[in-house]
Amino acid sequence: AVKIQVKQEADLKGKLKEVFGYGQFRGVQEDIIQNVIRGNNTFVIMPTGAGKSLCYQLPALVLPGTAIVISPLIALMKNQVDQLNAFGVNAQFLNSTLSKSEMNKVKKDVISGEVKLLYVAPESLTKEETIEFLQKATISFVAIDEAHCISEWGHDFRPEYRKIRSIIDGLGVQVPVIALTATATPKVQQDIQKNLQMDDASVFKTSFNRTNLYYEVRPKHNTKKQLIQYVKQRKGLAGIVYCLSRKKVEEIAELLRVNDVRALPYHAGLDPHVRMANQDAFLNEDCDVIVATIAFGMGIDKPDVRFVIHFDTPKSIEGYYQETGRGGRDGLEGDCLMFYSYDDIVKLEKFNKDKPVTERDNSKLLLQEMANYADSAVCRRKQLLHYFGESYPTDCGFCDNCKHPRARFEAKNEVVMALKAVVQTEERFGLDHIGTVLMGMNNPHVESYGHDQLPVYGQGKDHDAQFWHSLLRQVLLAGYLEKDIENFGVIKISQKGIDFIENPHSIKLTQDHNYEEEVKEEQE
Ligand code: ADP
Ligand code: ZN
Image (cartoon, rainbow, N blue to C red; front, top):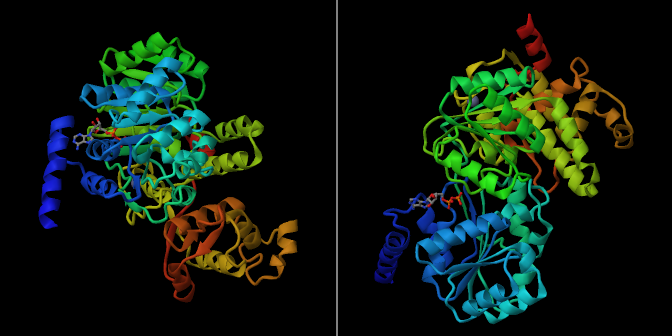
């Protein structure tokens, strides 16, 4: 058996070199690939650029039959298929851009066993005729790219993704699944596994920390002036400026151009030829700065992006992290600057008003997390990694909050009070309610639960809601409290928190930014 394994390892490396031209596997790629080849369910959570595609592409070549790759973006699908074809791999796709006869040809090639990878859009997948066709094919495994689209708690929910499991079950034979994503909070991760019924999956999760990225948040004030200054300081370097609307993209690209910056716009409303030409100009260094809506950057592999600016406040931390992740792919420094205003958050909330209720509530929570991140004076990296379920025990020293720390205050007594409030309300509530109880405020909730009778009720009335909110978030980050994965927004106490109540010690916390104040000081 040992011999066989050695041979297989050599074969995999041989294939890697022969087909893709790479000498080495990156990180845990080889372990993942072996897991897929053994027919196990596999769940891969790795940041963008880590090399996830290879984790299903290589097994597809080694195993008999066709691997089905479910991918949400038709444009990306074609790119990937073209790339594989260039490597001499028979890969094809099935989506709405194909004519009837083209579709039939693809299906014929799959059934005859020639095709090693078939990319399918989720919309096509759910069609009756596709299902019938798949039942005739020999399928090696199913790869689900951008698997976070399954979860309503993510930032990019796609209802069709929820049907994937039942379609796979309908194929009649047992087919292993590999799910891949570059963003997953613990909640989304759990949701994906539950929905795909792959609790048994081997999970491969690597750190999301991008040590070479510098994170900075500034209040939205004289934003255009700040932007021009920032970009001019980085003259000749490649950068991306994200804006929320097409109109803003055009306006900012123009603004930069009249300020002698080689900038071009990119958004879905542009003529496809212009859009492609602008993208190429950026890749070929005929343009330094691309001003774009979030549509830009997916699947684009430009290693030397030196800065990523969010001119408008992003909709979620997931999206923000993906977008900043396009900076510094070559490992050299990348600067990430976000302009923040609460008005943006309010505006974004209004956009959601036509969505179904649960979707709207989720979007609102994601927005609230974004606002919390911006307001907080705690190390940005610590916050970001905690959001994705990683603990980062020290401050990073490479973000605005680390470089310009706000004063800290002794919070031992307040922390004890807050932890007790969580315990006394029986670990069933979110930050807002706990703050309300501490402040001794009254509302129907407080009354109906009898929380005005608790010992902690009103003990924290010397501080306001923002203080308690900020304190609770910091205590959460430090691990004294935990998010309840089953109940979104609910906070529980950890063992560390229980120990703290029994044996309190000195703990220094910071106050949130007060951006209004900062702007005023700057003006004086
Ligand atoms: P992800 O899907 O995780 O965002 P990709 O699969 O697009 O990442 O890979 C990112 C880049 O890394 C691609 O250009 C890919 O060709 C390259 N790559 C992947 N695996 C290797 C490897 N073992 N050696 C060298 N380059 C690799
Ligand atoms: Zn930091």
